[in-house]
Amino acid sequence: MALNTESGKKSAAFFGADLRKCLELQVGKTGEVNTEYGGFEIVVREPAFFPWHDCFMTLLKYGYEVWVTKKKEDIVIVAKPSAD
Image (tube, rainbow, N blue to C red; front, top):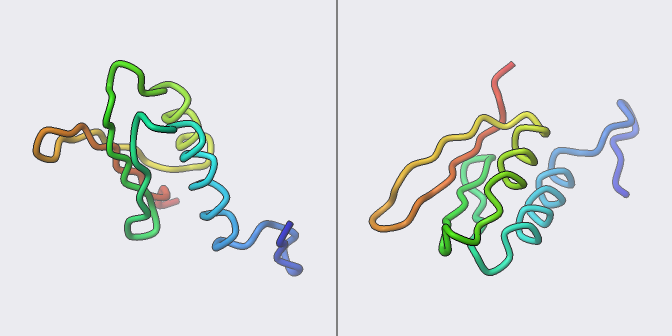
């Protein structure tokens, strides 16, 4: 595990990649996880089977603000780190 030696916390780059992998595993084939402006854009491909609760709880647990919107015919979840 990559650690920041000064604070003992994971580096931001490692954390983002790790969280993206976690989201990709949760979402599976029901959606598509993209990195956008330091956060995530998750395109929901199969709303009936999408793990809504798991996805939202993961993002909120790690301090992300979450919005749900629509792009063309797809539901899209947009998440960015909360401004403290």
